[in-house]
Image 1 (cartoon, rainbow, N blue to C red):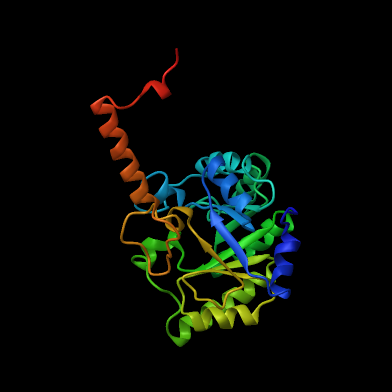
Image 2 (cartoon, rainbow, N blue to C red):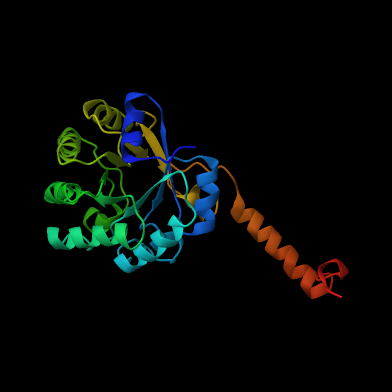
Length: 266
């Protein structure tokens, strides 16, 4: 397989080839999904929920993102590696945004950065992209704005809000982003945005009309506890397998069945 570069990902839209993006937070997982053939591995600030056990992504720091991106990079040969810029790593100023984006590339090995964007940060996309760092945008449901939104709610319902998101998507494209994540918006709006911009859209809870799809690895593998969002499809039930395997280990240790002769050295 060839290394997935930013131009290669952008060309997938024109070639009508769906983009597949999956999150990873460690080298072993990154290696497995890279070998499986995903196009983009995203080190999401969702690590706050799925790795750190936090109720939301807000406490995740730039140091957390640098650490996890660095170790994920060791497991990737072919996929493009993108990293989230966490809450308050880019909001204070464009200068701080450039500095933190640069750290994710220089110190951690990211090949692009992802920002949750509203109208106030379009210029930040331009500034980061101008510095030579590719930017992936993210609109719709933005987990870093969960306090403002009052929870994890579908966005873009209603003509006014749909029009705002469409205009925002076009502005992000104009600022130089190479792709755009659409999260939890009506499928009709996602299709309209996808048809209206030249950069690829990657959906999560945005229907089948996007140029690609992304899922959190823990959701995909059935490791996340219930309830999970409507857009999640489990391709395995590893939570059940982990529990069953661990209970079997507990039983064998307590009964003396493990370790057996087979698992002992002479």
